[in-house]
Image 1 (cartoon, rainbow, N blue to C red):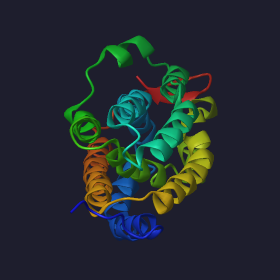
Image 2: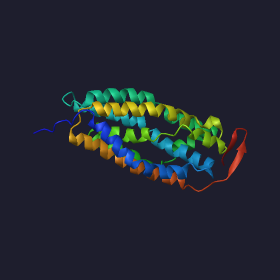
Image 3: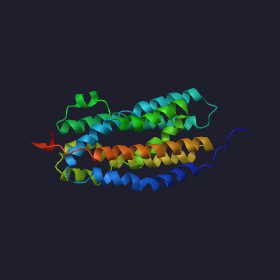
Image 4: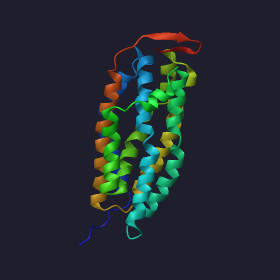
Length: 241
């Protein structure tokens, strides 16, 4: 007998509850990352590493849309999922360029950032999302997106980074995502509440989300422990040399 969808509204509520339990695990390396001492150097590392994550966002959603097409109209999840992904990918398009612009404002070489192989922590974080989209079901991507959107920069973070000596024109990504991702999170959980997910697909979303939490904690910890590098002063402020 085929699995029956769970009651509408249960998936989003359940995932919110699960993610609430992981908040302290994510906040701990975040506090280490955003501490004032040595912050300009870590901020530059944060931008470079997150560029590796963010540039995968639109290609991931494009692949998930293609997989929705492969699954066809017999799957009641794919039509609303595809509509959401097509809208969201346009909202996220070119955000990797924001990160490069912020790095340029710090005096970094954008070409070198693009050419550098992203660290294994980035491949671990994004690679599982690719695998589950390709080899299980594209709805798993919602768990990945939920964690990244729900852990966007806080509204106060840009001021803390600027107070540490980072030029304000290097803060676009942090400022913009502090505003945008609150709305994105609401839209995502509203979709999860509406989707007719079977228990298998509900587990796919939850598993993806919890794996993303684990990967995000590892990534933030890596950046937070990055060695301090000397700085030199420019007209706009201080940035890593």
